[in-house]
Amino acid sequence: MTSPGSLVLLLALAGSVSSMEVYTSKVVQAVNGTDVRLKCTFSSSATLGDDVTVSWTFRPLAGGSEESVFYYHREPFPPDKGRFLGRAVWDGNTKSSDGSIIIRNIQQSYNGTYLCQVKNPPDVHGEMGEIVLQVVDKVKFSEIVLLLLVIGVGSIVIIIVVLAVVMFRYYCKQKTHSTAMSVMECREKLTEKPLNLTEVNA
Image (cartoon, one colour):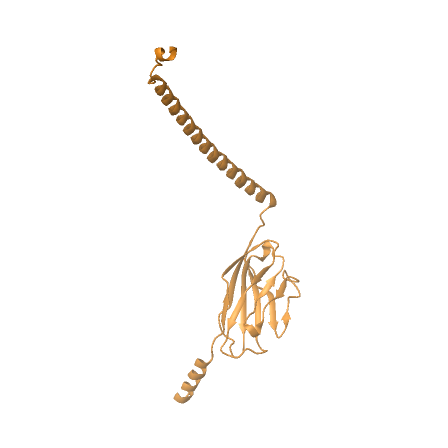
C-alpha cells in the first residue's frame, strides 16, 4: 500500500513534468507542382539538447494507413521509400525550436493531414501538431490571358464611354453658348438706330 508521503512525492514529480507544446499552421494551400514548407515549432521547459526528435507522419485524405514523411534525431533521416522519397527535405533547427520540413513538387496525392511530433526528454508528452494540406491546380496560362484580356477590354470600354460623355457635354455647352451669342447679336442689330441720311449726304 502506498503511504501518504509517497503519494505526495509522486504527485509532485508528475506535476514537475511539463508536456511538449507544438505549434503548426492548421491549414496550408499549395499549388500542384510547387514546393511547400510545413512549419512546425515547439516549446519545452527542458533545455534543448541533442536528444530532441522530430517525427513527421502523413494521413491521406482518402483514408488509409499513416505513412512516415520524415524523422530527425541529431541529423535528418529522410524517407527511403514511399511517396515522399526524394521529396521531403529538412528545413528546421532544433536549437531554435524549429522542426519544419519542405515537400518538393507537391502532387494531388499529397492532400491530407501532416502530423508533427516533437520530443525533448524529459518532455516527451504532448499533443502533436496537425497541418491539413490542400493541393490546388495551377491556373492555366490561357486562363490568365483571358482574364487580363477581359479586364483590359472592359477598362478601354469604360474610358471610351467617359470620354464620349465628356465630349458630348462639351459640344452641347459650346453649341448653347454659340446660339446665345447669335441671338444677342440679332437683338443688337434690331435695336440699332438707322443712320441719319441728311448727315451722310452733307
